[in-house]
Length: 323
Length: 162
Image (cartoon, rainbow over all chains, first blue to last red; front, side):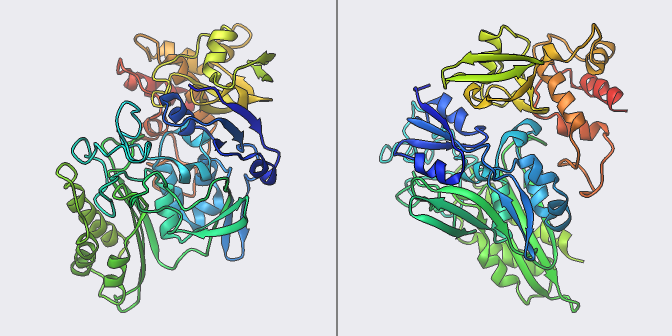
């Protein structure tokens, strides 16, 4: 591991003041420390923000405010989250292991990097790690990579479960940085790779996530479902966060669908949502909605399985949510 | 950098390179070799210790970030010449073969039994689930055992959970 400086920030303003080019913020370290050991991340300095007083979960208006340094396990087991945002608790519990969830923070979860095998292997080219060096995944091992929204430069997926639920819940990410504070909506924090795959998010250098706020839970029933290669401690092949509100007459009054494991971002399925609104809740409409969303899919030879998998997952989850 | 932390109830003040993991500090500097280095990437759980009472991966924890932390390793589980009930249960139920993963399994199980709330396999999110074999398996999924001693590990943990 390359040598680096270390400082513990006293408060968010102190953290931002300590930021220099080459500095990285350290949360739980479950991804960053590993990337440093792999040589993928080579910060000149770490500013430790894991103990900042940003670990509260409080009601705010009709919603909830979650501090950026809240541990994943504390988020998943908080009574208000379990009662009012069960899909969020389910998404967090579906990720990683008990030990990792105890260490990992909310902000770190959102800002974790892709697990694309080429990104994590410094002996290989990778446009995300070394812009312009190429993407061997397109002709190589892309079995778990993107089918939606990818570019000739990068076919990586975002690995977070939490982020998928937050997109469906339309969370807002509160940020402070050298230019002041701002609020970034979800979806909108993560960006598609385009020709700048080195940028996972819209955050600017030095910006620090301080909190995530959730609006009131959307009406309807919700579910988080995750398909993976083993029953626990594995990243999603495809996952879904879905909210479905069916009117008394049987038509869809409202819905939110977000997909994980299929794109460089937690993917909001807006096309599917448009098909569903006002349609009669049932298998026929659910299938039409899923197919409308996946019309835009451009699978690679070894990940084409994700398209029918996503389609079936959307249909099955919506059927489960139908009263 | 100089840090002070407590390991198994004993305070230590050490000067550490920021690059050193908590695991390497424990094993190489404090000569507590119970915690094991398996993958060194947070995937196997062999390095599991308790940090301020919560199970965590010492390979992914930087030592320099542990100022003021209270660490418990497998060496700190037994007290007054008495094995921790989980250690006794692992012996009783033959919950190991080669033993390399065992310190991590033990620390993880101690931490897990102190945790509250649902897991990914819990049906009802709002209650306190009973620790069935399925719950124990899910909650212990961060600890791999290449010998495949899982059935007896689950039995040993279940015996203490009751």
